Structure formats: structure tokens, C-alpha cells
Length: 383
Image (cartoon, rainbow, N blue to C red; front, side, top):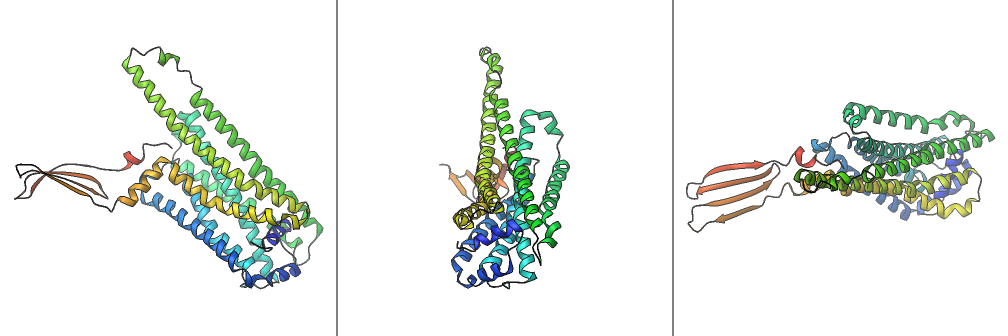
């Protein structure tokens, strides 16, 4: 990306860019085909991947669990980023579709800033909710069982509304920026950046690290001496194996969320650092490359998140595999030497059907049973 990325961060610093600066930038918009192609490609990938997550969630009732509703909500947020935020940003800064100056340009640029702040806030709070739900499941299992769909939806609704309200705070001083920019607007913007850095980046990340450490301690810090002393008991041995299996499942869950928190830090820390440097009137010529990298990595967050959920979370992975193979029908017939017995197995969308026929000529079949792949199969995993 070229110099057109820097004005966005300048606009985030002051919640706008002066009209003459915008006019200077707009003179280069017609030559930015490469940047448009890159941004639209990223947006397309984001929309496709998150659409797959949304499709799996709506198509399979087994995925509509308490722990998966926050993941669905986060996929909705990422989908919104790809379908609205990135295209609007591209139109604003890399195409001549919007006039180079005037009120329309100013208010659209202001809206782009608010939307980026909104996506940042709602994303981190969703990760906090996901981690908090898993923390309760491990540390307070009895309280976790009280959680139901209504409780989770209430929390998610609160997150969406509060994130929208926080990100909309800059609208309260928009009159101090346009049509005449007042010095107080810079101080207000700086204060808002500090507020977001603390409450959207630092404090949530401290909670994530504490929760991960405590969960690891809870899973692997339990004494197992009493199980080792009871090796002569078959029941104790089975119990020990069950605990080992459960611990392995929880380890995969914790690994997933550690990766999520690391990805969040890598993707969002440069974003907030660059914003803060622009607020401090740092030499913008030295921030060109960092701002481009921060913007690119920030958008890639919406690609990485659904990949983590789909390919590392067991119930999503199993549902994904089942969805892609459900229309495949595989028939296998075995004809016994006497010629009158056939065993046929069919895989279809409803499950596994086994048919045993005694008489080939009359085609009279006795249905031995159907193994349904339903909620019990996909829903037994907590991770």
C-alpha cells in the first residue's frame, strides 16, 4: 500500500483529515489498482471463511451450545469487517468514488474511524467472553452448568451495545473538528486513544493471561497420588484413564485459547501503538511502513479467528468434515459364496445405514439399524 494508508491514521488521530490534505491524496486515487485488489481480496477471504462458520452454526443444531454462541458472534463481527468496513475503507482512500473534499468526505472518513474502533473493541471483548466461559467450565463447573442460552445471549448483546457506544464517543466532539478544527479536539482524541489502549488492550490481555495460567494450574495441578495407589482396582484404573483423557481434551482447549490471545496481541498491539504515535505527533514519514503493516495484520485477524475455530475446535472440525462428505454415498456389497446373502452399507446425509439381505432375487431386505450422526456425536466435545 502507498501513502494513502497514512492519512487514515492521521484521521484517526484527529478524527478527520484537513480538506487540503484529502485533496492532495485524492489526486492519486485513480492509480491505486494494486491496493484495491489487495484489500478486496482480503475482504473476500474474510467473508467466505466466516460465512462457512455461520453456515455450520445455522445448519447444525449440535453446534448451538453455550460455548459456541460467542464464537458465532465473533464470526459475525469478522464477517461485518469483510463485508462493510474494508470495502468502505477502500472506497474512501483508494478510489475516486467519493469527492476529494467537503462534508461528505469528512463524515465518511469519520465513520470509517468509528467502525474500525468498533471492530477492535467488540473483537477483544468477544475473546474475553470466550476465555471467561472456558475459565468457568474448568474452575467453577457447577456455576458453569447454570449458564444457558439466555444468559449467554444477554452477555453478547451487552457487549455489542457497549462496544458501539464506546466507539461512538468521538461523535461527541465532532463539532470541534469540522468545519473548523479546534485544539481541544486533539486532546480529546488523545484521551480516547489512551482509554481504548487501557480498557481494550491492556486490561483484557491481563485477564486472558491470568485465566490461562489459572486454568493450566487447575487442570494439571491436581494431585493424582490416590489414583496411583489404587492400581489394584480396575475401577480406579478406569477413572485414572478417564482423567488423563479429560486433561488431554482440556489441554487442547487451552492451547486454542492461548493461540487466540497470542494472535490478538500480535494483531492489535501494533495497531494501538501506531495510533498512539500519531496522537503524539510523531514524525509521520517514519510511520508509513508501520501503519501499512499494522493495517494489513489487523485485517488478517478476521481471517485467522475463524480458522482457529474451524480447524482447532473439535466439534467444528467434525461438523465441517461431515458437511463436505454428507452428499457422498458409498455403497459396498459383499456376495457370499452361496449367492443369496448381501451386505450393503450406505453413507448419506442422515447417517450410516446397514442393510442385510437374505434373498438377492426377491430383494427383500431386513434393516438392521441406522447409526445416526447427530448431536451426541458432535456435541460430546467441550472444546
